[in-house]
Image (cartoon, rainbow, N blue to C red; front, side, top):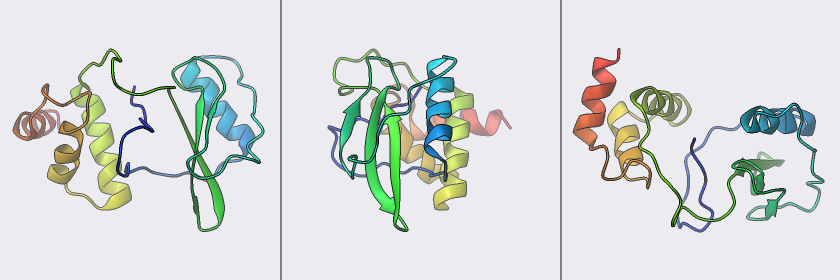
Length: 139
């Protein structure tokens, strides 16, 4: 799992998908491993608005800056990374995220790994070199 800590400074590279609110709710339900998730009223949610829908890992909706005039949202866990139990990402997860950063932002594998090893879950558990070596070995 990966979460957006809204208390941290800076930008988070991401990929956006154009979904209906019902599709958004379905993705949240899948991540929560539930049959359904209540579609919230997002009409008042704007950039930087945080709407906590429940205590679950993915029940906090965050308003993002509109993309080409279309409202944008993501979902994450409530609170901050401080004190949260963290686990290092697996090689497979690193590979998935690095591939997404390459496809979406044009980053090299090294740029993706450099970004990821600085994030709280990977920091101190992966180095740039160990992550690149593991990704190369996994091919």
